[in-house]
Image (cartoon, rainbow, N blue to C red; front, side, top):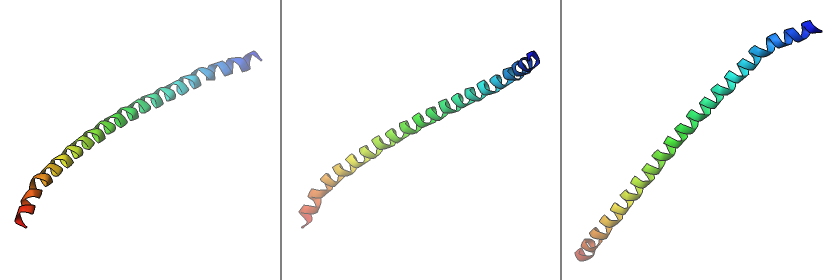
Length: 73
């Protein structure tokens, strides 16, 4: 009985170490994924702001060009 407990204790320590290492690697991967997702969201927001500004400029240009078209007729 004592021999069985000794064998279990000998193999338990490496198994716990392997599991701990695995969970640490998973945590690091999740942290990197979250960091990448945050960067992607920042880029999406920046792109949205640029597109919005571009649309504003196009609308202003259309408003400026519109009276010129009305005068031609």
